[in-house]
Length: 423
Image (cartoon, rainbow, N blue to C red; front, side, top):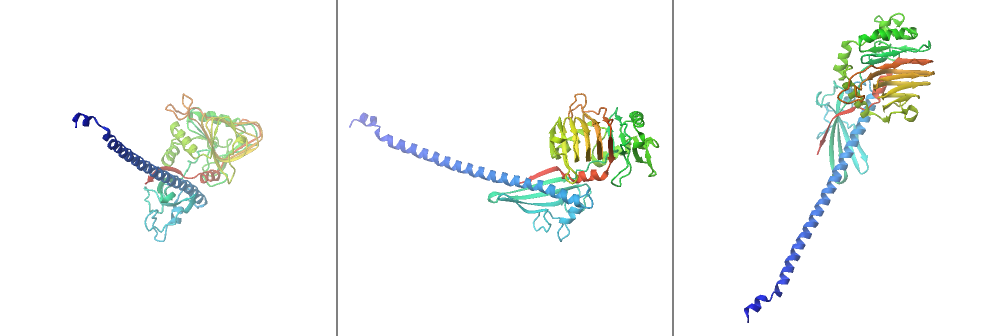
């Protein structure tokens, strides 16, 4: 046979080559199936773990509200010691989420869809997690969640009581160049002495800069000075007629230092005050745009307090209770009552307009914190001149009331200050 003919006959190679291709394609297909299956499993596991994470997070949020309610009903609203003692088991030690714990869970096996969570309460690391005495208003919540197909997540959140510093006066004006305008109605009453609690008497108007005091006192003296009330150091009732220095005064350096030490806020620092704006906003039930009126947003009621922040001008023309923070100009008018804390930071201007009967029970703090660029929260934040104008007619009662402030604080869930996720 001719060897050249044999070499040229390649028909027998087609089948082996085809078989090789089939084997390679089969292996690629099998690999693709395996990779797809693995991806599906990974995706499913990720989804389940994410579900468990969000369930644990829901447990933390629920526990914050449970802890708030317990604290509001306790004998000491400025400490978590009562709450820590209430969850300690028979061994007398806070074990929290630990093997063999006999602690009473703050929330036990709460269901959320086909998942569930349990939340434990311990002290924070500073006091020592097993310590039943809370010295710094801070505790730790641990939420353990079980999600779909046995997925689990554990979250730990350190929370602190939202304990606002006591206002130095019924009306506190922070910043150089403060102005106060009183009205000429003899029916009004402005009280610095605590009308619903046992706190020491305060001035009606407290300011930060001594150079502004004479102007403030002159304005008070020209606007029915007998309607401004407080008590002197001996506990005697005084008015702006009998003791003008007890009615309006400069905040002492020791008071400012005490607030810095105990609450971390410097009343002379616009950045600190604007950080406080951020804290309040993070806890707000409602954040409304400027130009809103109280008739457009629920501002709470006694027993149902609300934290409301308005980014801009606001008209308070209906009853409310809680914390109201306004970054623009606040006007209040008509026959209204407000119980709690009113903060006018940012533009730092508050005015009463028109007649009617106004009753504000709690405390008012006004500060222009914008700085030269007119925007709060920027590098050039600085205190400008705050303005308080109550020159409208009718009654304009402003009454320092520690109970209204305490009730407001008790209505705010403890704020998270640290967070950990354990896989």
